[in-house]
Length: 363
Image (cartoon, rainbow, N blue to C red; front, side):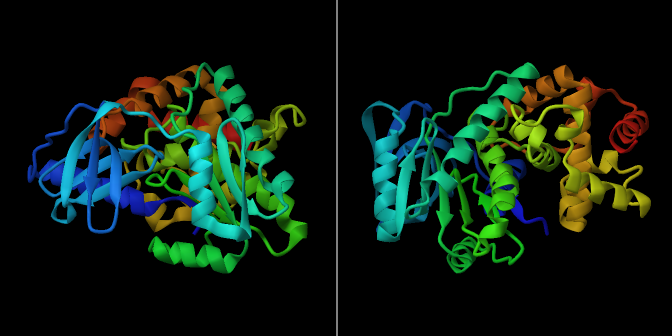
């Protein structure tokens, strides 16, 4: 599997909600999204706004930016609170993280991020995220996409060791030794770890961290939606596009060649020579299953298509992303709608589009 990913636990949660709605088992009875609710269980108290309220559970957006599912069977009390929903500020988030991670970590703040990192290593782990935010904003703005201001401070945790990271993955039911970084739609956090080999740390920061930061920034600025279905190829394609230095550090790396993700291009060419690429555009667009069946092939194709569209059809690509980011919350995205939406912006001739993409990317 690729060494970074969006939380599949979160995707599974949303898939379960979509299934309930699609089967007609429950009827949404959500209150106003501005109404703040306090819900208590035996273990904790939750405060936030209800995103979805059905016969089995609440889905709540909390003041710290987390999305929590609260089974109705676990709820002891619930009451409405006065006033409108107010996201927690950066200092409150910092205090919360200091208590959570303890004395073995420092917590640093920037304009848009709160970063948990190893003691004494602020310069290594904090600046890359704010730099990435600025580079992402600039690149998207150049393609006609003005970003929304993040509603919550974006949290990043860089753990001291791989062992701590493995324990975290196990807690998330995501134990996988190949995963190096993780963005969770539910917690809205990036979680990663410090490599033991310092010689590889710079490369690590320029791949895994950039990939995960791209996911996090995109899901917090209106490019993607945390509560609506984003096709997997769109989310992963955009993140791999920004792994290229011409995208994540355009001030120092100029020219068309710097915008090419060289590792992904090499993988793409290899699979093209094996006959695994041609004729696959439709499969990529209509379903996320290819990512489960052949993840490396799917990732490389998602990069190639996203890179081609961003460079050759920037206006249509930005408009397509805006449309996806405004899809309704917690609704399925069936193949017929995926096809319709893609064709609206890029045409119905998939074979012709694939040939043009192959010529532009490979030759």
